[in-house]
Amino acid sequence: MKKVVFKILGIVIVATMLLQTVAIAASTSELKSEKSDNQEKINDAKDELSDVQEQKSNTQEEINNLDSQIADYESQINELDTKIADLNTQIEESQKKLDEAQAQYDENKKLAEERLVTMQESGDTSYLDFILSSDSVTDLISSYYLATELAQADTELLDGLEEERQAVEEAKTELENNKAELDNSRTSKESATAQLQVLKEEKNTEVAKLSEDEKTIQAQIDELTEANKTIDQQIKEAEARIAAANKNNGSSGGSGSGASAGAPSGSANLGNVSSSGFIMPVPAAYDTITTGMYYSSGAYHGAVDFGSGGINGQPIFAVADGTVIISTRVRGSYGNYIIIRHDNGLYTLYAHGQDGSRTVESGDRVSQGQQIMRVGSTGNSTGPHLHFEVRTSPGNYSNRVNPRNHLP
View 1 (cartoon, rainbow, N blue to C red):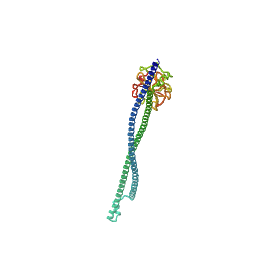
View 2: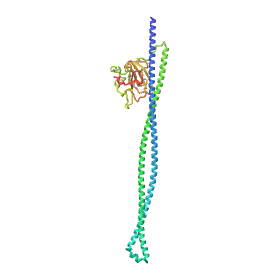
View 3: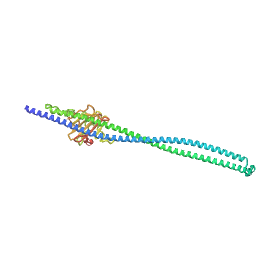
View 4: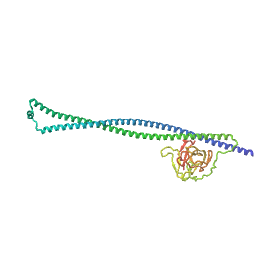
């Protein structure tokens, strides 16, 4: 009888050890799968980072080209300023010459008019006057010739002065027209420079945004790399536990706390079950989905969020019976998270739980409605909420499906 009892006890111990080893091995497999998924995301992020850096480089080159154009326009504006200054000087000189010519014209015109007045006051001058006042025919011809020449000289002088004045005025007008053209050209250059400056500022803003995107992506890469380091350590520890279990033939240890977490402290709705056999993972008062499979920006989310007001600290329930595959905390990313493999072949993930609130460990068996964690805001989270995923077998990151199709 004792032999039978010992035999049965031995079988139970061996079975327990085998189950423990299988659970740890499954956990290790899931960790390796998660590490592989993380590496894929790292590679994708590096590709995205490369694209952002290339776009940033191209934009910076555009800025350099704009700087060159702006410098060229500013140089042209400086040249135009010099030309305009020269034209202003020439215009001033032309105005001075014009004033002098006008003054000389006015003076000579005044003298000619005074001579005419004198001649008029002396009476009408006739050929008889010249004959009577002349001592000889030669003197007569000479006097008449001088009078005629003087009148003609006055006329020619005034005509010449008028022509000179008009020439100076035309030259001044041409200078003013040239200056107006230069002013228009300068205004056009200034307008183009201002537009280039605006475009440059827009490009600088774009570069600044790309720099922020670059930092964000690099932070994601660093976060995923750090998460993989944590996973490597978890795999190492899990493999060490498997080795220890294989060596410890006399041990009857379990694989965790099992269902010892007890009944849920919240109010799980066990009556409202979906066709997939799932209940809601949070109490009924907080089961409103605030974010779906896509963010409002259009970016892919791959999960649903429960983030109603007051949800912080509320219990998180296992949506169906299953075995805990992962129960851990990573820096950034999911923060505190749990993955459960359910009996129907689906996997569920619960993330961003409060620190210290996880009540199950890897390998534990959980029941539907059992509290496994509390809602928090750990990891990459902007506020308290439950990030909930549903995955098909084998439960990898790439196997995510829409949770709405499996919830009540």
